[in-house]
Image (tube, rainbow, N blue to C red; front, side, top):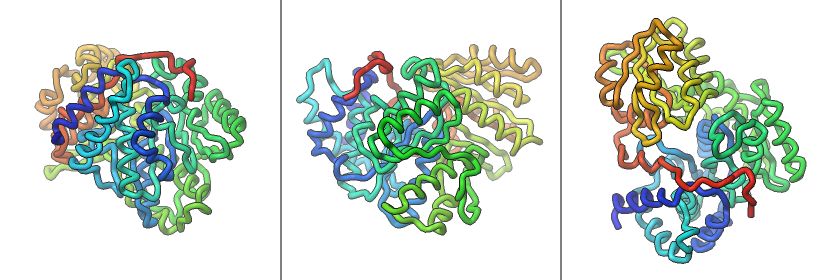
Length: 435
């Protein structure tokens, strides 16, 4: 098996869909020697801000001299982004080796209970982090929390960034239902922190923490110490200050277990990197591109606020591509009025909303804007060659394509972005039992 064959094997696992439940992951992890029992975790769930918070925690603890694993999803360009140690992507050779091991264990599963892509990738990451002898793993959920494959671990602490409407077809149609799924990562006696301020969602999280006797802390923007020594945060947007407050509070909660100085926290925050989230790229010719992976209405609100606050004097061109299973009409309503030119694009995914659908919604929201429909990002790129300030948003897929186009992320490509596709075996996650 070579790397291309390993990626193809992982891709073919998508035929087993996205099934909720922990039984398969527990069984597969046991065949791998239960690597999760050799590791310490901070488990991170939430609707938006998970990745940024994970990146901040990783940067802080790495600055403290720890060997830190980072598990996130989806990836922008290369599958290897999902599994990192001290921000070094897992090597192609390591993927081949661990995939080969896991493939041999799959014979223990009957066809009707075959592990899914995410279940396999979760155990792949655990196996690798244990091999690498990580001191701490920053461990992001894939979808939800309660029945997410990542939930086989017992962490040092749990984080729930916030609760917004997203993935309703899987997690529920109310904030309370979604909060119940996210709160499923709470473990008995394990501290849990959140920035959730929606009363319905907050009540569910607090009640779950109380039931499990888990110390609970809600972090607000004015939480102290929020940003020690006023470390400059390289990530744009006021919302990142809240994510930073959450990360700092988490470090404080674990201070007795993993001591970290205020100077180290400041260093970690000031050097954090998380591409594709309000990422401003300036080209040699002075043209600027703002890349943001806003992929739901709450994310669109954050982007809109950032444009109004930090780029108020600009007249941006908006390149917009959104997946059909998102609330794309609401996103168009929020973002279209901020642009003078709008280029709608079909994202490189079978789940994309069409450029025509997006264009119609944008014209309704901003009748004065010039709106251009494009069948692909490559075609869209030809229509923005003279634009001085371009905002590219709506989907991680689109951000991945734009990073490659800008020459900022050469590895991976379309063949690996397709690994972000999931779906097929839908069950009833809200009422499903948890092991």
